[in-house]
Length: 504
Image 1 (cartoon, one colour):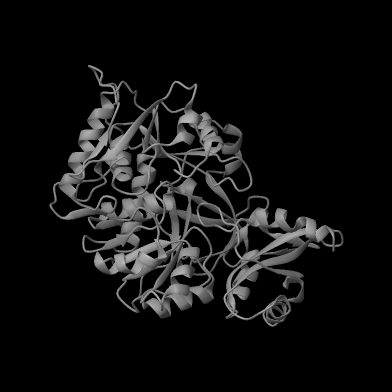
Image 2 (image 1 turned 180 degrees about the horizontal axis):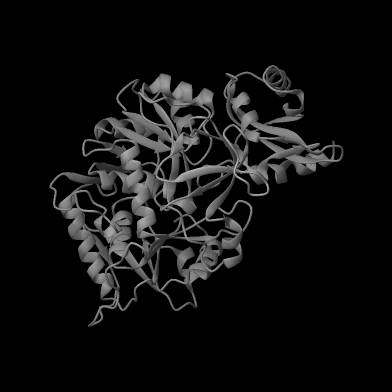
């Protein structure tokens, strides 16, 4: 087998007549051969546009055919793709354009926010569209007599993503062709993906989870990526059945929504080969309910933007899946360190660190953050966790999110898991609020799906948790704030309820 070294060689069989992509709006079934032809055509158009190797091209595109074709064409042309959320407002787009400094922006449809954000900049905006034949078209791209972009190498940067920025300004994460390709191939290997597999891609493609974990891994395996324009809970199982999907990957929020609607949506109780969960902690009680209702093993995984997505995952049967863990390392090394950077033995909690070929070299234009992010060649994740004797990793929360109640370090996820085990609780998030006596006190926000109140939920917690971990206050809310990757934003919860705490 030919060794694949760049994303230009991502596709398992570029000349195959087998389907590669199924998309909606418009409805298109694209073969690997047709996909390859589209990528090569657009890559040549970009090479002749006067861009230089390594120039950054921002993508503001909806999920679907044009996103994937444009992304792979940018990579094949030796340029750097910087996808952004199409839902960003003017100020958000302006901030990212300031940071990325792109030579061009490829956008789908009309975007007043983008035009306003780009005003006064020497950056071209090239509209993209899909014609009636299913061909992606770039408009307004100048054609120079000599192209200056070229073929990439494995060490060249292919993708520029940004951290979620829940505690600070988002940092640019440059990922090389090797980083992204190795991560996709590790996913293919770990889940034994083959050309017979079909993934229903419901995570947004402007993040690593949807792009690398679902779409690129599927294309690298020779399977079919089914890419709707957006996630729709009411249409999910219809699409899953219609196109013969064998697996999907999503954040816990989506699993919870699908589970809650399963009976009225006529969801199947078998059919998926496996279900993957990533980007946030999946409570063991929810995992068990999803497995039981949908009749498929749920494999919880762990990903980092700085590691081109996946670094760990639970395995397929018959190997053991351990609820409450994110499995073992996949293609990288994982270790646990203490506050002084010393490596800890199994069953000792500390900070998770990783190293391997999937890991970024450093943040874009931020040497100070880069220095702080690495210790002796290991990437510091800022996640708290512990490895067991078999190498399975259990995450206990973000280092900065641990609640310090009078010196007792409490992992919010442990409290989340207990609350989610209550039959009346649909969503839960524990967080710390300032407290004059203890420094921080434990609070929780809960979305209900049945009959309960704060007092009964506290009583339930007391039967499962030490007294100092039981939330002093439980707020019943209609929704819990989450970032665009589906992670609970505990800092927002702290800010939201801090004033209430000061009045108590």
